Length: 115
Image 1 (cartoon, helix red, strand yellow):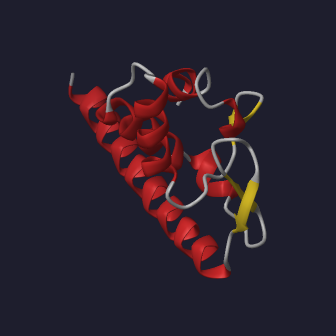
Image 2 (cartoon, helix red, strand yellow):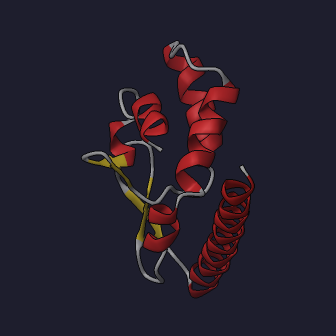
């Protein structure tokens, strides 16, 4: 996630609190595309998408998605709040990611024993 933060933060510091990503406003991807084009920011759509995905799929980001928490735009202004449904979705994504990580750890342990 550090690479994602270092990719976006120089251009859109309002999306961060220090080096910690804030919860993104809905439609932030399109806003970043438009802003990058308007300002001549040398980031491709692909690079912006990768950075946003790395952040939005991280445990820290998903854990911060609590009902009532603020979402921020590219300037750092609150635009909306997390709903109960969004919190439940984040919890489900978090559980899925943790289960996948546990399976990967088990496979690594088995592979380490066979080597």
